[in-house]
Image 1 (cartoon, rainbow, N blue to C red):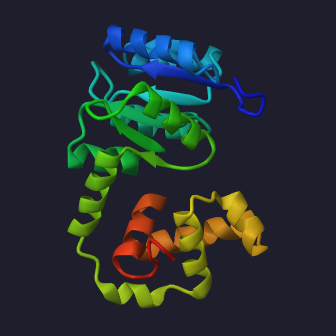
Image 2 (image 1 turned 45 degrees about the horizontal axis):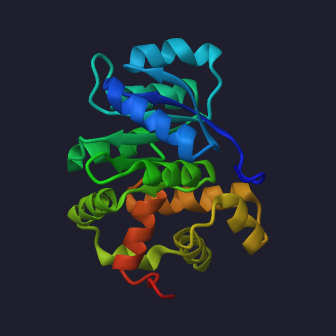
Length: 222
């Protein structure tokens, strides 16, 4: 493991034991910076483990017996807000993706298209403060956004500072880095982002950047 790469402690929550076993073996063998400290068959098991198992991230399936992935996410956000949530599921319908994003996940990788290597990359991205969505999931998010039929008149409502923040978010900077780049407080960056989200009727950075690209606020090559 790279000395500069911090150890990330995770719990895998999935009702397929073979999937958990294969994923744990891959992390142990190829990604020593990711440590599986627990496995849960469902949401109930996860919440029994959390009080005595400190972790950084939950790798969460969506369709499980008992509590659904959406309900687990909502409860984690309320009771353990510092824990990152990365959804990993074969269920990737537009409605499911929308519900999970609104519940507060940091990322989503499809079992149908993803790999252990991509999951490791996703975990590192999420732990660095970024959102991560597999290519097929990003396409679904874009389609969801387009379906909202936002009017282009809203683009004129952005201030110059808000446009700067949108551009820096597109470049993958987290709030702390944006604050340092612009010479403002991190709290101010969060306030600007909340205002942008409110204007667009969204609640995550990816939708914000997709909107900005689609409506010419920023260009992919800008």
